[in-house]
Amino acid sequence: MGWCKGIGLSVALLMGLCAPAAAEKLLFIPLDSRPVSLAYTVDSFRKAGVQVVTPPGEYLANDRQTGDPVKLSQWLEQEARGADGAVVSLDSLIYGGLAPSRTHELDPQVLAKRAEGLLAFKERHPGVPVYGFATVMRSPKWSSAPAEPAYYAQYGTQIFRWGALRDRQEQGLLDRKERKELAGLEKDLPLEIRRDVLERRKKNLFVLKGLVRGLEKGKLDYLLIGRDDSAPYSEAHRDARELEKSSDPAFRYKFRSFSGADELGMVLLNRALNKARGETPLVYAYYNEGKGPATVASYEDSPIRTSYRQHVLASGGYPAQWDKRADLVLGIYTPADGVTLGADDPRNGEALDERGQRFLEKTRDYVQRGANVGIADVAFGNGSSRGLVRALLEEKDGQEPLGYQLGSYAGWNTASNSLGYALGQGMLRPYLDPQDRQALLTVRYLDDWLYQSRVRQEVRKELIWPNQWPDGKLTDSQTEQAEKKVTEKMVQEGAPLLGKRPERYRYRLPWHRTFEVAVALRTNEGS
Image (cartoon, rainbow, N blue to C red):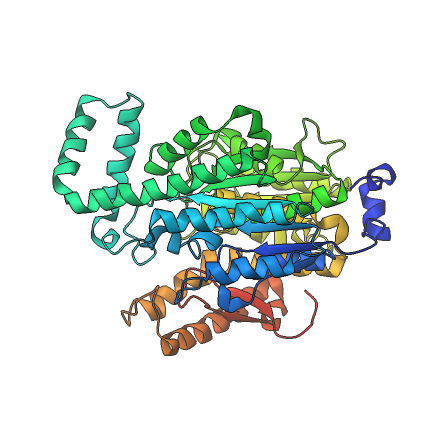
């Protein structure tokens, strides 16, 4: 925030003195068309006064089509003039999207040609910084077709365990029982499936290594590689380790890899903006009591302290040792025992325990002292902590709820997803007017808390499962009925804490499944 630090963050926020004289133009190619990848991310930066330019929707992947790498590449070339930076999903430009990166049947030569096309962009446009992000092919613990090759529907769990044991074997960690289990899995898993899994991972690693070499040759300004749905022992963890070993340590400041995927666009847009403005925001973190920073969240392969630090550095910020001069104070709400259950678990109750109460009071204290405070709610996976959000949204002594005094809040999907969003939107606070900041918070509470941790489960139980609908491939008619049910419940169940806010928004299931919802204002109303 530059000279704004000198006059104090709270004064700058009130006076609006941090707004830039002219809007930066940032080109953005997202992972796909999901709201978290595209609409929510872009809306955050546009509200902050940034000109974010995105490709036509028909060029991007959705649940019914693969994105078009050729047209995306042409679009990037056409829009390059006058851009202050380009944040590019390499999965979109090379495979056609995140899901296609796992299910494609493309020849390695085609993949290499597409990658080289992007790397050549820098030579033609040396004045446009290029920030690329890609993903290590994930290692899901479940049977997840059609987001994976079809055989995952039957063998997904076994494939994950086979990969975990192979990772342990490579590190010399297998005991006698595990060696026997590995031999059994290799007998039970059909040879053609094992070959296909390894061939797909080999292609993915081939592409990623080529991108790292391109970075080292100056053809990218920054490369961020996410590990989507990983685990401490997994094929994804193994591939990331190999990728790290193959990279030149001299370029590590331009290359990072950590758990996460859907938040990477948010993180790199922050980096592009911070670099364009010459800023390095300081971020200080505090945790819920218990395991805290040592927590290894579900779907991830490293402690949250590591993920936090890597996200901050990737976004163009710097982790602060002390809170006094921090531009963002980030509260990371971890589970006390370090175990991240699903948000639909009965233990995700409406009340805070004593540790949670102390976390809440610490947050309140920071806010009252004038700090810009964000919360990454990672106590549960795939949704918010019900008790924490209820406490944030309850009025106290007639004052505005604490949840609406925050700079940011996020509690969706994986811990890194939430971490990246809370960090990214929190960094934008100095450039947001109060109404826009609260509008961003409202969308997160509606999506992460009300929908993901409450309404989604109810709609599944009351509508999807009794009718045996294929959640993940709903028909248009089924989707319309589900959206109607979602809307009714969002308005009804959101009213006690959010008042009339839920009525002002429309709710869509853009990927014809209940996993994610698109939340958008019906009109140009406020939060």
